[in-house]
Length: 471
Image 1 (spheres, rainbow, N blue to C red):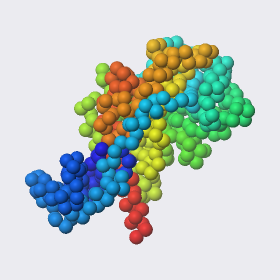
Image 2: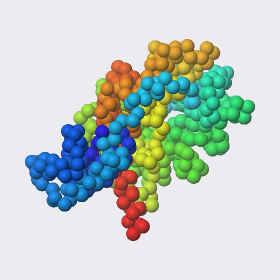
Image 3: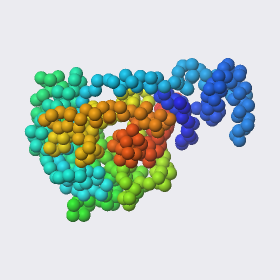
């Protein structure tokens, strides 16, 4: 499978199955799909393929290609084919049976340390922290059992991940500290290493929290939507007052204290700010270097929800953001943007490429009272309760269903060029918008494809900059 597109003047060709990216001239760009068609028709030999390509291109609106340029392009394309860098066959699908039958271990937990929140964010899928249920705090005893479960079910895996989540986890801060201490006590005797992370709205963030987090938390996620007027509109306090002025100074302190690493400010854009590039620029101008601003996922009945007709506007905005991203990188004022961070050389392992986050198998969410769910976005939907910290996983059928979830189980993924970058997307979004974890969230898919295209173009542009410096 080959995907071709033009962005920012670059003619980009992605060989989907190998992951190879080629930045080519206009002639090669035109020739590549025609050569692929010739090969599909079992036409072989440089002379035969060149003649077939010349004839076909002459009939196109763009007209003929210079004979010498055409032959050179065909030769180079066939060399890439022979090197398995173009027109590559899918090497993964035939092994999908083995992949589905693999033994899985639990390696990450999302601890819902608090089903309560001191903000009233309008787009919150957790319903102000309640998750379709009652307000509650996780006790140390429940959290302790969750960590014991993780250790017992992690097999030989050494590195384990635990995210303190909410609601707002700082509302139950004492238990967070106690659970970190307990986790550390398990490490040496069990040959484990915990990587703790904290997701917070910042309202209760203070020096004591920051000192502890800087010692114990591998990453801190700081919620902020960008410009003050946008943030305060969507992330007010329960009384309706804004929260921007309260959290921004604290967030700056976090970023500085962690040397601009191992944190990120995480925002959500809605229909209220389709010009979200301005929010990313605002966060960068405020000194944040690790930034994520992501599209809201909401039912279209909500006035802030993204709609299909917004896709062209959002796509153009990603293009605008990509150019700004490149400009700032070249000027030495760069920042990282989560959705533009793509590894073209190594990338995720095969399991990640095929199945994504591992929800329901390797990754589980734990409620304050100890129920297991496939992930935080399923919490509150009782049909997805998989078990609890006392009994373990009792609904193995749910686990097995999620184990079957991969890019080859999703009809719309099979022909998508981005499938090995998004790994099939979010199972929760697919379920909520498509009725099945093997369905799709079509709007999200469109935006994901655009972000992948922008991310690859950015790599091309920055590589050009590097080459120019060498000269």
